[in-house]
Every structure is written in C-alpha cells, then in structure tokens.
Length: 332
Image (tube, rainbow, N blue to C red):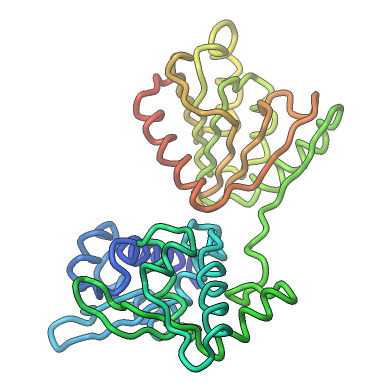
C-alpha cells in the first residue's frame, strides 16, 4: 500500500475516533469528513473509506454521496490502539465493567441486569468513559443492553455468555480484550558511556532510509551533528532547528562546509529562552522518529537512552517543530 494511502487511512480513523469520543452512537456524514480532511482529495478519501469499510469502519453510501453515514468500528479502535494512539483501550475500564457485570450475573443467574448508575458507581469511572466502553463491549457482543431514551442508549445492562467466558479468560490466564496481543512495542536503545560508535550506527541505520526529509531538533546542535548527517542520502531535505546557545563562533563556517556536499539543508535557531523541547529528536519523512536523551554532537560520551516515538507523540513533536521553524532565524 502506498504511504500516502496509509496516512489517509490513519487520518480517517483518527477523525472518526474523535467523533466517537464526542458521541459513540452518532454516524457522521461525508461532508464533515471531507471538510476536516480537506488537505486530501475527495477521491482519495472515498477510495480509502472503501478500503476500510466493513472492518475498521462502517459506511452507508447514498445515491448522492459515496460517503454518507460513517462510523468507526471496534476493530478500528483496536487498530489505532495497536499503532500507539490513545484510545479507551488505554484504561482498564472495560475490565472493571465486565467484573461488575460478571459478579451481578453470578449472584442472579436468571437476571443479571444492573442499572447504568450502579455500574458507573461500581466501575469507578466517569459516565462518558463507561458509555464508550459499553458501546465497544456491546459491539463485540460481550454485553447486552435494554432501555433507552433521555439522551441515553441504555438504562440497564448485563454480561453475555461470551462476555463471561472472555472475562474468565482474562482473570485466569491474562488474555486481554481485544485479543491482539501486546500493543506495538516501541524500540529503545541504551547508549554509552563510551559508545559513540553505537550511537552513530543507530543514527545511520535510521537516517539512511530517508526518502524526502530528515528533521533534527536539538538545543545544542553543535558541529559533531553534521558528521552524523553525512549518512542522510543526497537530495533528501534536512531541517535542523537549534538555539543561540551554539550558533556563535565558527558555527556558520561548519554548516557551510556541510552544505558543499549536501546542499538541501536548512538550519534555523531560536533564542534559548524560547526553546520548548526537552529531548532531542530525529524524524524521518514525518513517518518515524526517535527521541534521544543526549545531544547528537557527542552522543555516546555519557549514558543516555534513545526511544522510538509513538505516532501520537511524533505528531505532537512535528506540530511543535513547525511552530519553532516558522519563528526561527535562518543560518543557512
């Protein structure tokens, strides 16, 4: 699948999950998603909605619109969760709900329903979070509901036989819901002290795969950084943002030396007082990234950890980078 289509599909699911957070039951119209994702063409959005339809989302087209009534599915939420995005699956609320309902049906096998207010109190969660998890569990047929009205889609709820079996598997064997195994594991590397070679190898293996762009965010982007940047393929744009803590003296000369072999680099700096980043970051093609606990120029001299960025954190950092980039003064 093309990277652009992967990105559009992620954006569609993220947009639908945000709407789900507002109201789990609402089906959203095509006009809303076209307006919100206006950076992509309608044709690309429709194509990727159709690719996701039936598994990660449900879409009911009409004669006038190929994307009309659209809603995320539990599988769509699970897909976002597996990619590292924050969803209702971050918390254990679903297990608390099943625990309360499992206990209720064990105490009253012929009935087992409990009221919504009782469930909220015993699950020790806010009502929006409970309602979102009830929708998720109901769609997976682990619970069933009855009654509605007054702005609520249920007033009573009980666990199903399937739900009881899954809760028992969780309690006895630790089988998670959903049964997708552990979420994606994001890599970490412990570097140093005295492991500058290891740091360079990690940087090289990441940067040399860049196709379009490498972003460097480093408060102390001193000269040694440019030795690492030699591993970026020719023609790939390099954007470095740093601070005035390091841009004096012979800094301009060092950057100009690098430009002779790699002309597609731009370096900007901010006043140190305006620096809002804690770690140092390298981001490739805005699709992958690492946070380093030490500046790149002497990485490996002292012990630090490099951690792969979760998608939601990477996107936050890219947003902060864009703000810094617009404010920054150009060195080259």
